[in-house]
Image 1 (cartoon, rainbow, N blue to C red):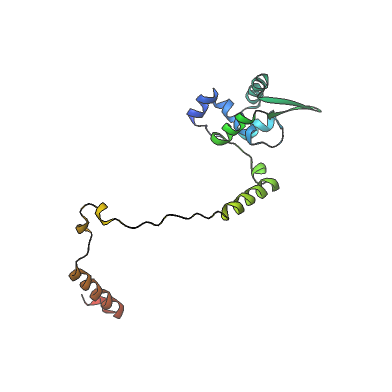
Image 2 (cartoon, helix red, strand yellow):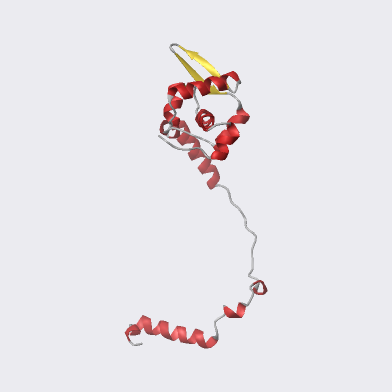
Length: 159
């Protein structure tokens, strides 16, 4: 997958690579391997691992040792919220996971119960400049009604 991060977001995070890595980790619910990060973001694995190691040194990302592999997890919630808002990257498996689908359905259900009462508005004829240009004269209204009646009777071929 090849895609580009908005240049402003890349500048904010210091590089496009870092923005992609953070964007993927921010949306991940479980720790991810460097290979999973690379595959999801379109980065080459060595580049992804290098960036993950840098982020781990800053303590924004925690390294979780599992038998035979390292996994990475974004641990700073403030950074997560920022990244989710501007640079979220997710996989199809994450997006369509049963938990995510359930969460979206619950949010949609809550949103469907929201009722707004809008204030009543009335047109202000004085607010339209040159309104007489848009008003139909009684003679024109009669002519249009006559044409409409003829059209309904099948007389449109007459004219």
